[in-house]
Amino acid sequence: MKTEQPAAPAAIFNSTKEVQINLKSRMEKALADLQHEMSSIRTGRASLGLLDHIRVDYYGTPTPLNQLANLHVPEPSLITIQPWDISQIGPIEKSIRVSDLGLNPSNDGKVIRLPIPPLTEERRKELVKRLHGVAEHHRVAVRNIRRDANEAVKKLLKDKKVTEDEEKRAHDENQKLTDGYMEKIDAAARTKEKEILEIK
Image (tube, rainbow, N blue to C red):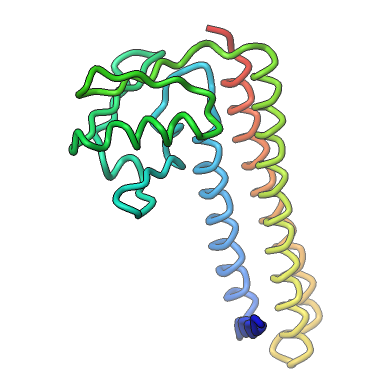
């Protein structure tokens, strides 16, 4: 039977400033994670970010593709993959075929060519739906970070480390930071949606 892992102890803060530094740093990480996840969602244009989540079975170890080959975008609708070890052409092709990218690689024995076909209307809609799911997941993360920060501020008040006025100011500041990051998430998602829907 698996034993439950003890919950990580809550961070100990001595001031509202410390709470806000922590809040900002965690929200920044959530935003960076969103950018990273969005880069693997296809648009009608070739981008190496598409291959970020591809793992190749390299002698029994799932290895990121960019650690096994040179990747290039020689033209807007093509990615080329040149494995450092030619024996890996098969496993690399297989990893791309079984991924959720819906792409069809071909090789000449040395280089894998990955044509990026134009997206169909239906595929665009699926990708936009996936994008909205990814963005919503990160909005929820940001709201949870705000909740943690507000709890930390309440604890400061309870421990008499801050006054009621300072607590109220800190809650307002937490909300302001949250609104700012929500706007950044929305803006990033809008830009990505535009790229997906753009017909070349």
